[in-house]
Length: 423
Image (tube, rainbow, N blue to C red; front, side):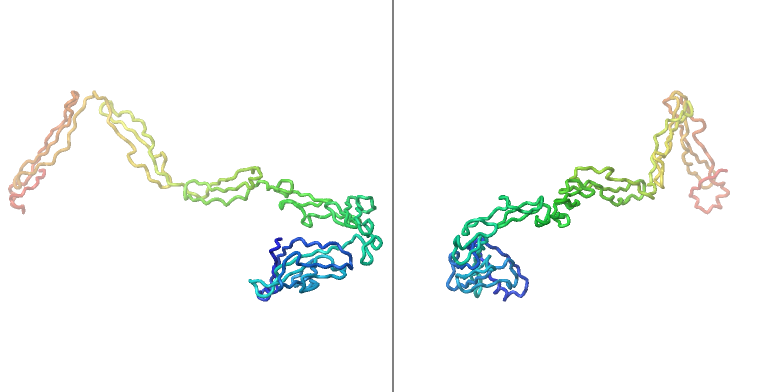
C-alpha cells in the first residue's frame, strides 16, 4: 500500500450521515516487525521513524484484535497523545499487532481526522523460557520441540529426525515451530492422529462437476457423471442433439382446391456434432376445401369429315369443351364448337344460283289498275366452262291499284300513290 494513502476516521462522518449503513474497505501494508520477546520484557516503540507528524498531531495506540467490529468495542486502547509507547513488562495477551493512528487537521474536513497509521507486529518468542531479565545459558533453557544452549534455540524437525509420532497411515507429518502436526491426505479431514474422515465434496459443494452432471462421492475424492441427454467427462458436459417439440401446424390460406399445411422442428445443440434422426418438417393436406372453379378450354379440332358430295359438297370438323372440362360453375368455352367448309371436285359442273329478289317497284297509279315489277340476277360463274345458268325467270310482275269505279270511295287525294294488291 502506498504510504501516502491513508484512511479517514469515520467518527466525524457519523455525525453527518443519517443512515446506519457502513461500508469498510481495509487496505493495509505489511506490519513493521519489532522482533521476538518473552513475557515480561520491556518494549518501546515510536512512530516518527516511519512517518512525519506535525506538532498538532494526536496519536492513538491500541491493541488491534484479530477481528474488527463495527462499533469498535473489542479494541483495547494502550495510550493516547504520545508519538511513542512504552510497554513495561509485556503480557501474554499483548503480543500481536499494535496500531498507531495519527489524527490531525486537514483543509478539506473540519476537526481532526485520521491522516495516517502504522501497524507494528510484536512476536512472542516460543523457543525458550528465561528467569529474570538477563539472557544467559544459566538463566534460559530451550522449550520442548527446540534444542540449543538456552540463548539460541532452534526448532526440532520431528518429521525428519526420527522423533516418534503417531500419524495415521496415509496422513502426512508436517513440522511446526516447537512441534508437529499430522495432516490427512487430500479428500480427508481430521487431526491425522485419531481420525481422517472422508470429505463429501458433493454434499459440501466442493466439486468441479458440470451443472449438467451428477457428483458422486468416493473415498478421498469424487467423480462426475454427465446427466442423461449429455456426454463428456463430467467436468465438461455437452448436451446431445435432440429434436425440439413440433411447432403448431401452419394455417391453411386457400379457400378451394388443394393445399398442404406444415409443421417444423429443430435439431438442438449443433455444437455436439451429432445429427437428429428423422425429418425436420411434415406436410398434411388441408381439410374441407371445395374444388376450385375451372374454366372450360377447347380440345384440339377433330379431323375434317369426308365431303358430303363429290361435287359441291361440304365437310365439317368439331371440338369439345373438355380441356379441361367445366368444374364448379366456371366459365364455359367461347366460340363455335364446329366448322363447315365447302368441298368437292373442282371440275364438276356448277349451277348458278339466284340472288335475292329486289323490292317491288311502286304502283304507278293511285286510281285504276297498273303493273309493278321486281327482279333478281343469276350469279353463275361465267369463267367456268362447266357452269350452267340459273333455272327460272329473272323478273316478276303483278297488278296494282283499284278499279276506276272504286276511286270515288277513296279518302286519299287523287295524286297519292297506293300500293297495289294481287287480284
